[in-house]
Length: 329
Image (tube, rainbow, N blue to C red; front, top):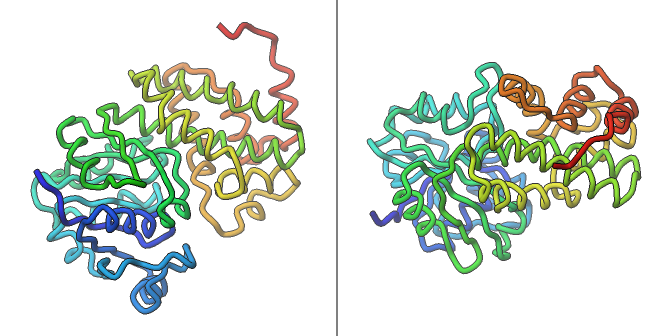
């Protein structure tokens, strides 16, 4: 199947960047935005309020009509915060044609239900074919057309390949896969670890501590993925280790910046600064899942304790350093 018409749901930084990537791939793109103020900026200034300086391609059509945006789409990229995927998928469902791929580009797990994003799409929009896109990708880099590689997974290998071909270009390279759950776990867990890496930076604990945290944190991510049957290649690939390295690397990552502020002594409310750090929502539900699968995740546990106010940053650091010496095997 040749996919020519793509709708992107969400005109934030990442949605705008992906709309630009799809346009560069030669597709006809519709960008839906629910926020009136940002929609006005996208239509009149051809620029998202959340990604200033990145001008929309003239071929990208902007709309606030969700049904119209979905009706003609051969594939849909859902680029909204993880905790509102359910409401958008529910609203989207009546307008979907049978068998339309819906690619979730959010990284998280739903509170309460502990469901992953593709599970929510399957439940709320039964006509959709759920897929997931994740990997080491900053919106500003993708918007500028800088070289970026990601993973695009669907349970149907043929559909995953077709979607990767539709979105791919010389600068945006989706590698297709079928390990949907592995991709989702990597995207969710790395956000929590980025907060931890930010705390290390904010406390000025040094590069050695940062490297140790990332390595040990990846071990936790890997064990959780393994318990769900995720492939080792997924965990060590773009959507696992690759995304973890990027999101722990600097202030472009909201989760890392959030952690830096915590490390410097800010409260959780002060650290957020009104910006979304998905890891802060993911940490507690990820721990619930880990407990259900009997997976030990001490770094994730420490971050969840800090975010809930059960521990201070210093107490969390001490709790990790005081753990019994053990083997790495």
